[in-house]
Length: 354
Image (cartoon, rainbow, N blue to C red):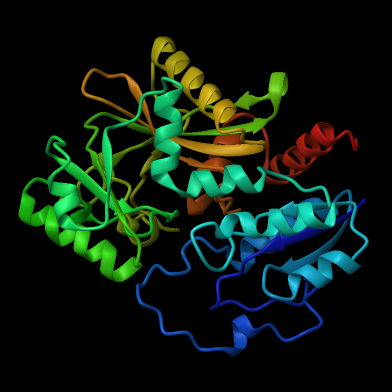
């Protein structure tokens, strides 16, 4: 089949000789952008990841790389593709992850992964939590704060956790996001409003163990891979038990002695069933497709609550990079190439294009 791989590449990277680069000069490489925060492009993929996905797909298909910029629409329209493998995070706005799927639906091109509505919903943490609550899926109490006053008047119980409403990849989540006083709450809400130009999500902090769970497939074929536990005791002594931007991108890196993840997680059968059941239900009610990664944390009673849903999960190929979806896939017996092609094959079966 002719497969288009659509992506957003981190700006500090360039294509290597083994990839099919666009025939035009991308403005992403030509324009200097004044970054407001250090983590601006954390969601986008490295060249290493893009190449690894392309190589995996090319084992069975003809693969064309397309960067998700303003030239993507014409390339997709004129490419004669049978299906699109979408890992694009989008460029602007609170519904950016929905941009490429919306183009593809307009063009009538089949694609992997969730549809625009699910992608836009999951990037809005408050809408996600509202849907979960409606369906009786546990998630911590919260408020959307456009000012400190909105946060302080919400009658939430300290400690609280503060993060941007519309970000992923731990963007905006730092050690300071955990707050225990009104003054700390004010500082964090104002930091989010200023640096990210969006509301802050303020939620009651869940004190228990944290897991992330990879799911692959659809319907009766949906597979839940072994949970990954976040081992916060391995972090520096000054770090709080949260998977912050520092933990993800500064401490838990290749060749680091820190081992943040345990996979499979050391849990008993009862907790394992609870985590699997809540993740399956979350995948279903949010209408995820083909794959997703769901973050879970235990409350004070030891019951799993949903933190966030990632319908475009990170997929760093190097095992030393500690990327959770590939880590869980390996624990389930799939290597990287098998994982990527399993996602494509799940989409093909869903679409009746096997």
